[in-house]
Amino acid sequence: MRRPRLLICRCITQSDPRQLIAGALAVSILAVIADNGLLWLQRRLTPNGIVA
Image 1 (cartoon, one colour):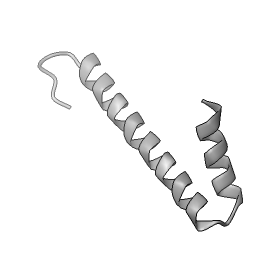
Image 2 (image 1 turned 120 degrees about the vertical axis):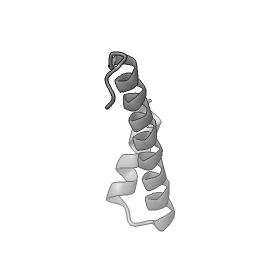
Image 3 (image 1 turned 90 degrees about the vertical axis):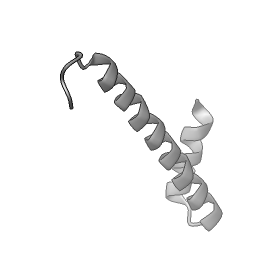
């Protein structure tokens, strides 16, 4: 898992537009995955009958 972190860190410190876009896409994809994972966990842990 070292390579994605390296890609994100390099994109923050450099000004190459292609690398900035690649880093932004990587962060966006990770955010969507984390959001969906937390939504699944919330639905899994919420008791039946309680609407969030």
